[in-house]
Length: 190
Image (tube, rainbow, N blue to C red):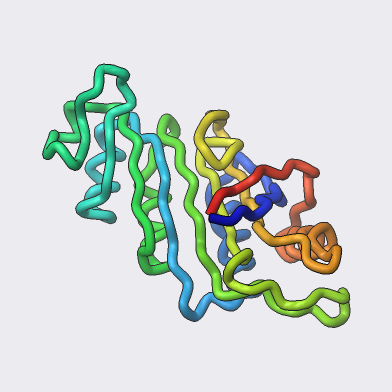
């Protein structure tokens, strides 16, 4: 297992603004063979129904500490709220329907697994391969793991410090979306 560094480049209370930033970054990246991964804490019955429409068959388990409630046990997720959900390797076009299914009390991290961050010769940046080319949007959470619930949304770009270009690349990507590198970086096991 390897790690990347997830750098926050835009935090906003406006979900459509965050989605526009994600779309702009996807337009910069090589994402021809990309996939999207989901991790969320679902608290509302309405969001649960909508998420299950978007991602049928996803894995989940109850957050309660009593040891019951999971997709593996065949339980009804509506009777186990709040639940944590995971889903991996979905097509890129499933991301926005999932995100818009969430409610303010639900939090998520949606990660786009990209083919590469491109070379930017005018900025002195080499291409970054698939192994370190990710983009994450946290919804109603400041962090990747839904430990810091909030009413805003944060766009994180992932890259690896290769030839000292990480900070330059993060700033370059932030500039593409009208954001700025906040200095906040989280380790992201991949």
